Length: 177
Image (cartoon, rainbow, N blue to C red; front, side, top):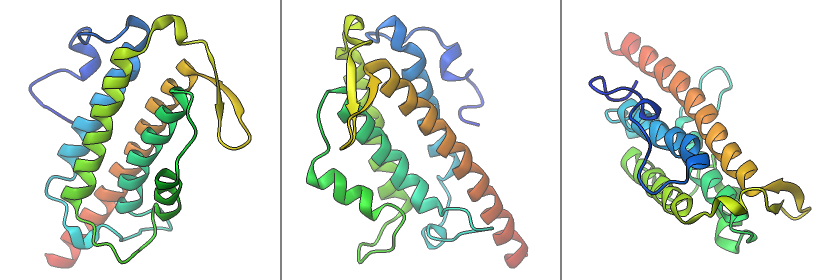
């Protein structure tokens, strides 16, 4: 997936201003963004909330990808979630009175990846092993643990989104052919 003319992000060399130990995190997030944007560029808004085989909808994955990056990077800054973040979490994957479009959800994800990259740039490598409490229970993690989980969690949900979108598109072709 992604740009057919370029190698995957991790094979393009080091990213400027990203600490060496955080290069894999940045590479994964940028790769996810490229693949996601390519995957759903022509995906119809009408199919955002469709589910197949009990799997989560594309809308859920798009919302969750954005939300989880925001939440995990908040914890990495040694902050707790605010009311807006908790409300966003509660609404992930649920139909509300808001009208979502593929473009809107994609732009939100892209913006969140940009914010994550900016945060990686200013992260000191000496802080990577610092304790960070996660959630209300303050479960133990570290800055690098949160960043690594953010990258792997993003790629996991991207994989699920890819499968869901491909199945929906195959079903759409069957219906329209």
